[in-house]
Image (cartoon, rainbow, N blue to C red):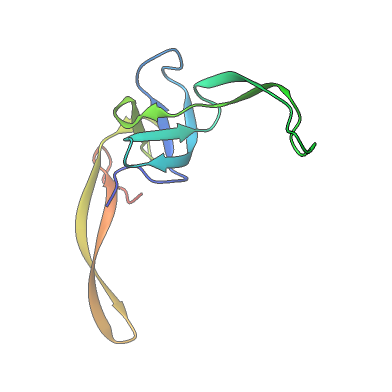
Amino acid sequence: MAKIKKDDLVQILTGKDRGKQGKVLEVRPREERVVVEGVNRVKRHLRAGQFGNTEGGIVESEAPIHISNVAVVDPESGKPTRVGYREETVERDGRTKTVRVRYAKASGKDL
């Protein structure tokens, strides 16, 4: 189970965008990187497509950030926190099942 998942609200811990918060758009586990909305924006010079389906010019988009440079935001305090796991029993259709749940270590609230 990954500590940071898509659609999590995270805060940047280091770099030029330190302190900014944004939603995780994409997680790349093999590269250990995440793409965060509105953070680490870079400009790319693109050539126009041969068949007219892509327009050329300067395109600004988000670049991936190393996963160690972001932390999940605590839903209660709005500050960065570490993520922990706990096992909970859930009852569905008369059967009990054990599931792992992510929680914020600072407040103990579920993520």
